[in-house]
Length: 117
Image (cartoon, helix red, strand yellow):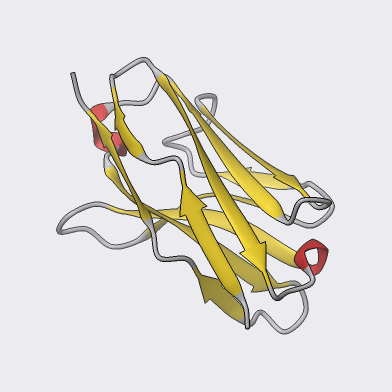
């Protein structure tokens, strides 16, 4: 049974920092492209960043230079380092796993991130 569990969300001030984690189980982690998505109230879910098993990364323009995605294949865990967050980054952040060949995907339950002073 595949499980993705996010943690690390909360309230952060603009310009601060926060790190999200996604711990996975029940899957061969290294053969999945992992990604962070977010959904703000009244908006569609959007991709924030993703990373292949080999470490190739891709970012939404809105977070380039501020957020960093990484993964530890030995720990079956993915991270999102959020530096200099802005109020518009406020959303529920979801972890996603997508098989590199079949594109079968899984989602975590989400973690709320609120950027506010």
